[in-house]
Each structure stands twice: as structure tokens, then as C-alpha cells.
Length: 315
Image 1: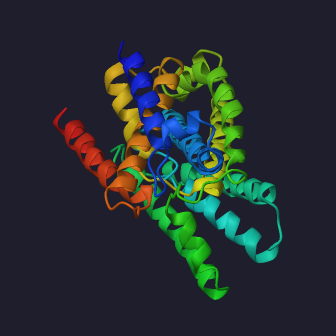
Image 2: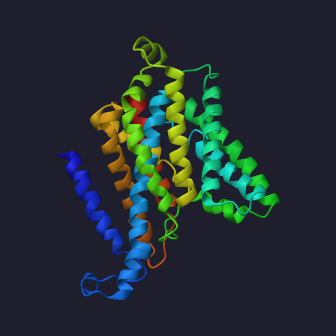
Image 3: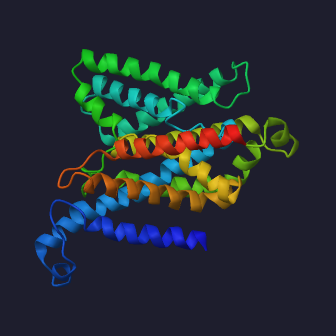
């Protein structure tokens, strides 16, 4: 019943999203075939709504997979250096291949995100403590180092404005023809769903995985590769959205448990719902202007993140 409620709420907010903006859309005018109204709907509002659904679902699923691969509830692409590494990869392409296509930039983002995450996992094995808070702190520090390197080169080559656009997730510039690569996250989702059982077993630990006949390192590499590919796509299309990959999987696991395959769909829907809600708030809080959705997600996400930390400590 809860799943149906989330789906129904997401449907209602998606419909609402289509009609919120500087230019008013009227349902009656659309039904009468008004050309200007249909142009706005098809070129800006519908692409924005679709990208919100896909990006929210993708980042939430990436967080879910990373938490199982690292056996830590507070790890996600934004707290493991994955997004910062992808950003560095994009910057290097812009420096050495300024006329590179979006496909080349996306591939570079994937490669650097994968390598950066592997470095993070290597560093995580050096931690002397099992405190779950230390691992995301390590990821944040590692990400800051990578981000500082990227910022240095961005200043040196006058690319800081481009860099800033990647730092903040923003859907206001999403239009027809500028977001379609996000559709590639759909087949990635089905691949993740196919391997979900293996990710669940890996989340129980290396000894359990080996005893059940699962290649631990290979499965972990596959999971990291899928997360890197999906994160790179989202970063290229809409930028980075903080906390989403942490809070949504944690809330879902509190309600439905820790089975990856059973939680994939509900995690995807919940991530889309949360991001859609934040984007609508971003558009109405100072209308007709809007704030970047990453700011709204950051404020709400940080509050929820603090609650999760306090709840874990009390538990």
C-alpha cells in the first residue's frame, strides 16, 4: 500500500511540475491545441520533469548499491569521491579536447569516477577503526582533495564558471535535446536489478560471499562500474545533487529492510519523489525566480542526515 502511495504521489507531483514555471500553462489551452503552450510543454517542462524522475531514481539507486558494496550506510557517490573524480575527468577533457562530444565527456567522467571510487575503497581498507562514520568522512576528505585539484586547473585555464555549473545540480536549463543521455540510466537500472541478489550477498561480507560461491572482488568491481557510469551520466546532464544517495536508501531500509532486489523499485520511486518535491520548492520559494535544486536538497538532506546519525547513535 505504501508503494502505491509513493507512486501516486510521484504521479501527482510530476503533473504539477509540468504547470509550474515563469510562463503559465493552461490545461484548457493545451486541450485546444495552442501551439505556444505545447511548445513550452514539450521543449522545457516535460524534459525537466523526466530528467528529475531519472536523476532522482539513479542517484538513490547508486547510493543503495555503494552502501551494500562498502557495508556502510553513509556512503554514496557524493561521499566517496565518485562525483568529484568524475568532475576532474570532465575538466581534463575540456582542457585537452575542448571540442570533444558529450559522449567523450561522459566516458571520461565514467573512467575517472570508477578510478576515484577504487582509490577510495583502497584507502578504506587502511582505516584502523570500524566506526561507520569514519568511512564517509574519509570519502569527503578524498573528494575535497580531488575537487581542489580540479578547481586549481579550472582557475589556471579560466574554466571556473563551467566548473561551478557542475557543482550545483540545476534543472532550470534542461530542455529538449540536452538531457536525452539520461535515458541510458534505464538499461543500467535493469542491469543493476539483474545483479541485485549478488550485491545483497556482497553486503553481508567477503567471507559469506565466498562461502556462497560468489566472486567478491569481481562483483564489487561490477557494482562500482555501474555506479560510476550512472553517476557520470547524471553529472554531465544535470550536475551533482548532495545527500540524495545517502538519505533515500537509509529511509527505505528502515521501512522495508536491506534486501537490494526488493528495495530497488521503491528506492528509485522514493528518490524521484524526493528530488521532485525539492525542485518544486526551488521553483516556488522565490517565484518567479528559482534557486538551484541542489541547495534545497542540501538543506533538507542535511537535516535528515543529522537525524539518521542521531538515530543510529541512540540505537
